[in-house]
Length: 173
Length: 309
Image (cartoon, each protein chain N blue to C red):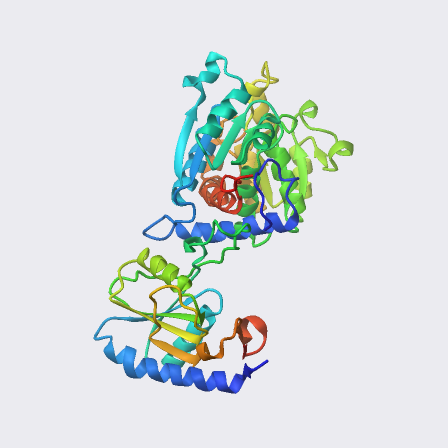
């Protein structure tokens, strides 16, 4: 099974933070920058990006959202998915907000995440940044930034492991 | 948790079910701090509250919970319904099924009625109190309140005081707390507390024994005059013997114990006025957590109203 190593992920995160500094942070024009991760894994990535931005002298708010209660398939599954706490201790009014997730596929999670964000206010601008894209979009949703584009691989499953939750950094597909 | 249609008793749940509902309660409570206190999880679903016994708190708590999950709520008021005109529970169930309800929340003075309704309909049935049998949603909010205050339920000591024999709250709450690893004891008037050999729960008869046992939480039950044909004792005598008096409150304060009560409170009977303002009085926390716990219960149950079988 092909995989992406810890070192490659680390380099990708550095490039990702650099991209945020060059483009998003530069374009925010006075509005506050917030990096909001989608639970689970997206929150870990968002936390790391906020730390990298901080060490480069750029302050960004950190948030995490659980989109479970906004899913469009609650009724289609027999078992209700477990809930995780959201952590968004600020209004999203007028923010430049970067939504972070680990795997982008159908776009349904991003759709639900947008609904969640609007419950907390009206952001000025929202971007979608993902660690991997495995293709298979079912909604008109396109990312603004992808660290690893795996959509050509035709792989049914992409797994992301992160040190904070899984004890190691690795992506398998 | 595995798909489950109804919630009738705590005993029917496995450990994973209990943990899942408790964990999600915390996530539900986060919603209360947002400017939009509503999530779309049960959008388009119908919830019916069917209360054959008077209740303000439990019913409104379930109603708020259902509204915050975006469900539509219908209130079936028994005093103005055909039940007083002699309709049987079975006929009422048929009527309700024709209304295509997804969730039915039932309270009845007879034990077992919610289970009967659950067997006969596709809707998820939640027992909101049946006779002296069970009150599982109360158990969840109590367990959550203790978990929130003390970090974990396991290892905590809780003494439940009052008319244990007729109390569905005592039964359900002691069950969930013991399943989660807490130690429970009972205290109350001798004839109203079942002996230890039947319950496995230590029975105290006075406050000295409680202070010696050093519980973390004092859980007071309401003296239920409506469930006993004639009051067993005058209110003042009960207060002196089993209530939280001002003198006992000082001791409780010294020992840093918490006070809980399922409500509504009879001031001057179970509890003195000063105890309502005591720093570790968790009664208002229980009310707030009741909404979150009931949201979690509604969310985790799966009605069979979608399937055609």
